[in-house]
Length: 325
Image 1: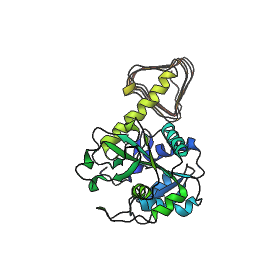
Image 2 (image 1 turned 180 degrees about the vertical axis):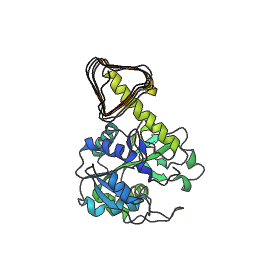
Image 3 (image 1 turned 45 degrees about the vertical axis):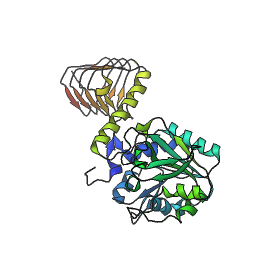
Image 4 (image 1 turned 90 degrees about the horizontal axis):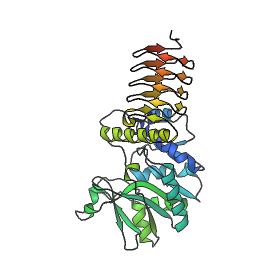
């Protein structure tokens, strides 16, 4: 990211990317959610104040396997399923996680790995499978042979693992690799070595599971989340003349038959009543518009409350409850 800020705190669509991951997990109703933190842990902890999570500090960053092992005491229970996710995958969706969890329970094995297929899989761990479709191993990019680098099926970093198997196995994982770290992926080869079947859940939506590792990918993730939001609103009866240019924060509510022209930005806990018209480039922050309000092009409204039928001239600046004539 070329930044002094912890990667998971970079904002994408009005929230740190870590928040999007935690929001996706909520519908699964986990008994406990543990966030393993290390780099800039004070800042990360502050950002999680509104989430029901237990924090686990990884004092030394010794790899993904070590990070999960650090959470053993906090998880406590040695029965049930542990779902492991990365904090830099803000596009992951609850439905995908629920489908993976159901498949894990159905096949009865100790471990399920989420995979996907990329046209250009560089920098991702490759999935080695047998003829039956079971996972034999995950080979990291830096440890892969030229032949293995040709494999396009990759590890997404999301797992469902039986708790007792997970922690017993992690204690046998070594650091004999190019990074000198404890790879979480090694639990796959250990499982297959013990003749346990390792299932895969392959998602057909690779964009939903890819990590954000650059400002370019951050912008791409923002665009995807913005368009998901806009699609939902259009299906609910909102007209958008250029959805790709319109940005509406998750906490904003809109009534039916609102018309939004290109470049409109709505943020804060704004409420837009039915039949409102917001012209090109209108910016509205934390305001309440009653029905049939017409906001002219390139106006800026912040903290305002507008009565039904109000007409705002183009290029108007209103803030903190000012009432237009």
